[in-house]
Image (cartoon, rainbow, N blue to C red; front, top):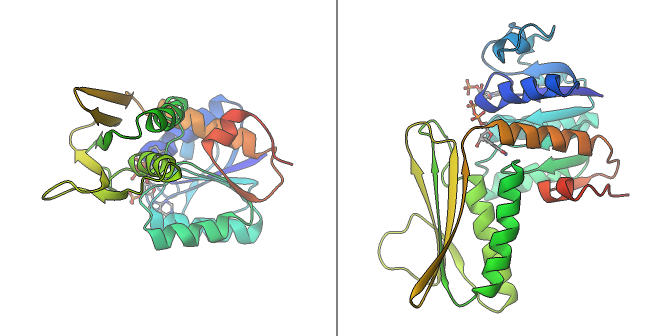
Length: 260
Ligand code: NAP
């Protein structure tokens, strides 16, 4: 199995290179727009692996492409991968609604895992939030997240996904709420989502359910990026066994069921 990594010189890409090699996977290509011509292993801090970083995705020649770049780059990478029949594992976040639709149009043609958060803990957090939303349907719900100051998108993809989970649970119970990003003025019939940026915070997400006389808080804190990279490698190993084109989630990966 030949693995290509896009964004290989970035914070996540370097960890994906390292974890892929540690897991005995064959990294055959590395793409980025910085550190071009350098060995991807050296950039990742693990010494030479014999794969030089290149910047022309048209030269993609792999079985699976992992993408941790930015929305515009990821759309191009996904289009080219889908045209070449290359499976995808996408961790990039920050897509607009229109970009998300375009991304899905490419990804549904090949087996693809898309997840705004590959950590096992956050995927457990999603299930816990789903359960709590169902039990606490009459409570007010708000979400906040904190990330490092270099993060390009706000609110985070994980916060948006969390809000969508809650919105969908409540809609099934007949309670229709809008998602409201960064409120000014009075609270309405909505789930408020807030992004805070500063320092080197890897990622924290909290959901608050406010009732009369009590408040339930559910929090996930990432203390380093290893859990994201390890989850992405789990997704790579799982998608390698999947032949049926379609868009899968990290919950599909964790179920260990292979769709036929
Ligand atoms: P980063 O450090 O900025 O890394 C992204 C890398 O991609 C940078 O080196 C960037 O170069 C490069 N790049 C830009 N355009 C490219 C192109 N056309 N082809 C190849 N590489 C290109 O960001 P990060 O912290 O690693 O995060 C990357 C993405 O993953 C973000 O969307 C982030 O929100 C997301 N993320 C997801 C998870 C998850 O579990 N799903 C976890 C953490 C982060 P420049 O710096 O020159 O632009």
